[in-house]
Image (cartoon, rainbow, N blue to C red; front, side, top):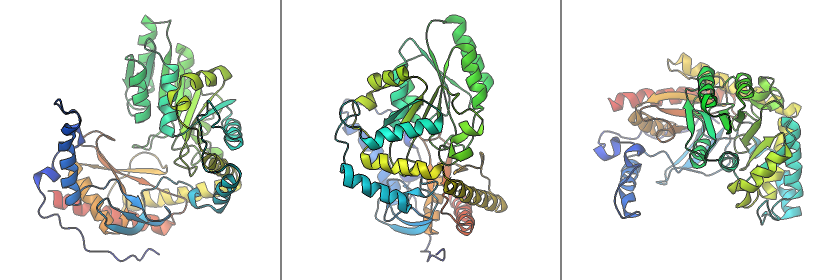
Length: 439
C-alpha cells in the first residue's frame, strides 16, 4: 500500500520575487477607499504562489481520510499518498458503527435540524448527546454549538462584558482570541504555559478591581505546539483570585487521557474545571462543538447571550448521532485500543524524525509540530513532500508568527508503524531538499 509511484520533483529553479517573498502579514492592513478593490494585491500574491507550486492550501480530498488518501490541489494536481494532514485521530470517520448511526438518524429525522437551538432545532439525538457529554466530563450542564469555533467564541462573548477582564495564554486558539477582542478591551495575554505569569496578571487586576469578572483561558493541548498547561495550578489560581477558568479540549478530548477524557482527566481535574469547551472535528468524526458547565444558570446565560448558538441552526441530527456513537467508542475498550494504536504511530513518527536528524517539539500528542522557520523553506518543502507522496499541512502566518512556520503533522490510529516511519522519512527528505533550494 505504501509503494506509491512518485512523480518527478517540482522544479523551483526560476521563482519570481512575488511568489518567493512576503507573507500574509504584508497584506493584512490594506489602505484605500475601495474596500473590495484593495483585496487584489493579496490575490495576485497567492496566484503567483499557486502558479509556482508554493500554495499548499484550499486542497480537497478525493476519498476518505485514511492512512493513505488522494488530495487535489487548488490547481488540479492530484496526489495519492500517506496522509499526515487529517483531523480524524481515532479514524472514526470510517468506522462502520458511526456510518450506521448516521444512516439511522437520516431515516428518523431527515438531514437537517431546520432551526436554531432556541427554537425547534434540537432533536432527541442532540439532547441525549448533551446528557452523555455531561456524564463523561462530570459537568451537569452541556450546550451544543454548530462548530467548535462557535463554542469558543460564543462562550466568551456570552459571559464577558466590557468592564470585565480576560487573562489568556498568548497562544490560545483564534476563536478564543477573537472572542476576547469582541468582548472587552481588558485583555492580558501571558507567556505561553507560564503559571506565574497568570498569577502576576490576576494579582495585578485584583489589586485595582475587585468588582468585575475575570475569565482565564487556556487549552488542554495547544494545536501548534503540542504542549499542555498545569490545569490544576490554573484552577487553584482562579479560586484564589475569584476568577473563572475555561479550558479548550478540542484536540485532546477523545484522543488522550484516561478513557479519552482529555488532559483534564489526565491531571485528575474532571468535574473541577469551571468551564470546559471543545470541538467534535478532531476525534468525533463531525463538525460541531460544546461547552460544559456546572450550573444551569450559566448554561442558560450562554444560550441567551451566545450569538453563535441563538442565531445559528443547531447541530444536525446526523452530526449529533455521529458524535454520540463516536463518544460510545471513545469510552469503550475499543477506544482504549485505538488510543494505543494512535500513540504507537505518534511515537514511531517522532522516533523516525529524530533518527533522521530533525526534531519534533512538544509532547507525544496526535499533533506533531516540526519547526521549519523560513516560510520559503516550508512552501517548497510542502510541495516536495507532495511530490514524494506524503500529504502534510504547512502552518504559516496568520496561524503562527512570521518566521516560525512549521509542518503540523496529524496522526491517526489508522496509521501503521510502517506508514508513520515511511511518512517521516519522506517529510525529512523533502525538508532537506527544500533548505538546499531556498539557500
